[in-house]
Image (cartoon, rainbow, N blue to C red; front, side, top):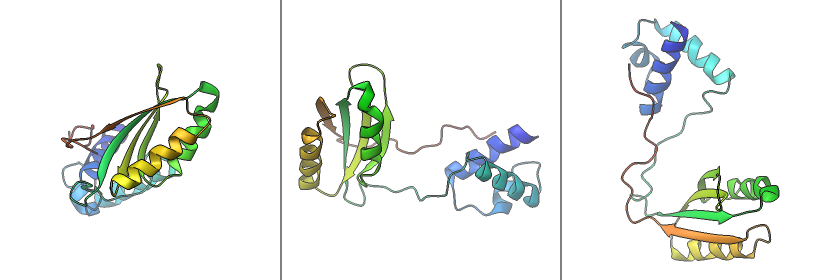
Amino acid sequence: MGERLDRQLVAALCRDARADITDIAAPTDAVATTVQKRLRALEDDGAIDGYAPRLNYERLGYETVIFQLSVPLGSVDDVTDRLRATEAFVTVYQTDGDRTVFAVGKFEDESAVAAQLHKLHDDPDIRDVDTSPVQSVHAEGDCPIPLE
């Protein structure tokens, strides 16, 4: 039951991180105490790393901008660390190809986007910056794990 139960629990939490233990246990064959123990084990293993609200950034007035950066491989870790330390960046990936860093930023307004662009262009570790403002969000933060 372990691996299947873990997938069921993660899928349920992915859809509603605020769900009560008994509500999470209901569709499984496990009792609430077993669910609680499995969740604690998943947390201890690092598979679950906190519980966060799912925000609708458009509704909150934020603009979403996708950044694709050309960064030499030797500098990728430093650049991604700096991006992760910047509150506006909610997602940062290292990728293959000419654009070695892909990041998604959420900004309060155009001036915040412009200020971030200025910083990126001034960064000596970044060769090139390509941005794509998002016109509309159709899916974001959805759970890829099917309910069983």
